[in-house]
Image (cartoon, rainbow over all chains, first blue to last red; front, side, top):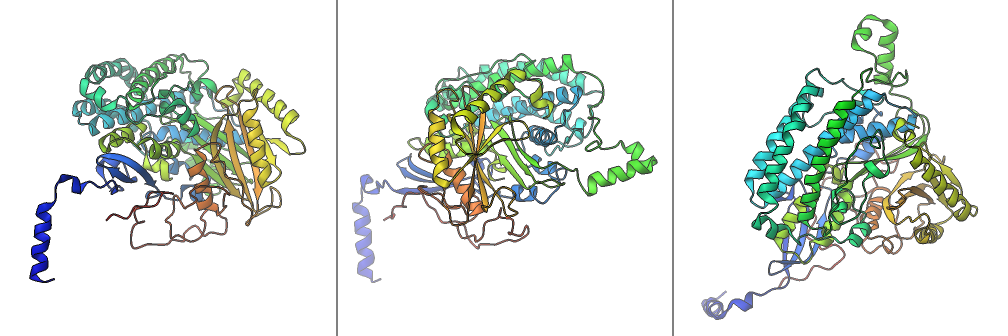
Length: 409
Length: 187
């Protein structure tokens, strides 16, 4: 490039005014390793100014072939993989999966096991909603909510730790029962939790619900109408925020959900604000359900008395030879599940979490399908962000609570 | 059947009535079975039949099957579920009566079932996943690309012949794209 060319460039640069920079085709890549993207999510956008005009999601960055592993591991070995689906509410996945295998084998768990599982499912729902609401607020700069709510998440995790020794990757259930019965101090701690936790919700309501900044950032953002929500097959709090009255706990009750009293929170606008309100109310209802579970928790064994799945007590394994052989067979060969298939879904914190198992007989599944709520939610996100601004997209993403482990499986 | 469902007699009754209606109105030589928890499974006769069947089921004003729960598939290489290589599974659900129906469709390697994206937008990613994992192509799908695996990946991981520990590495990311829409030249 000669000297004259450089002079020419400088002159033309001087002549540029602001409108020359207008470009309706600015491409921007968000993620997969951006802190606001909640895991390895990647959204590619075409912008006009700061308005997103077209968006595409690229997923699969956390794909660990969990479904393929389900065909290679025994039914017991696969329980640990369910922890890694939605790692914010691992208990819920454990229970949903074991419930599916039990349905396939025709096993009815004991009364105590049923109520304990219901209680744990609601506890994990509270944890998951805490994460969603607190992180959503944190993304928009409201740090106080994060501190307030994470105190209670910590408390819940400490309880879960006392139950099974783990905090996130719980693996607390077994087919036909639980790994451990509740420890002695669990119920008193839970009572304290349900008594004191609602005050935190009141505080957060006071901080956010009437807050001008919060309302401006969330109302009318990331909108999904009732029709769109049904068209995109989304489930859970986001579907209810769009005004669809559907909750599997009430409509297709499993365990004893038809015996406990709770209300289903419904929104109207399907925006970030309504999703926040629905989640806040669901936490209150979960507290209500836990209170009833504590009151009605029966005694007795946590294990079903079925030799096909009953894992023998350790004391018998060490002292009786037949029991040792039985223990060995359960863990080395796996449990024998009859041929057949079943689809079982629970109302997880994010929506309908379903497991579809095809069994050809034997200790391994022929097909292990995880129907994850995040997958459908993220698909709708691709469409609902179009027309929003970039900061709104971050708010909308936080409100649908995508968990990459569940999305990519 | 576990106690997850047995305790709720009212719901079981609803499911039984729905199964009876499907048997009466939609069987027409199609095989109707039930699974381990007595949920109905209806076998579609051919790739075009599944699409016609679901349109009729969607319009049924008693069943009101208005919601797509899931689309998936499994490998039928051992031939236990008919002569076709794969079985595609469609789970549909009613948001008013809360009953489920599973439509099964046998598909051979070269057959292309109709895409359901015109009925439910949610079918888009689900069909892409089935294509990615099994290599089943859906006729009329607007954007049938791989979804979980990389675009350059070869093979279909959930086929039974695909080895568990096979891996493929790529030196760089998937380039920026806008799904089915073309990327504008940025000049």
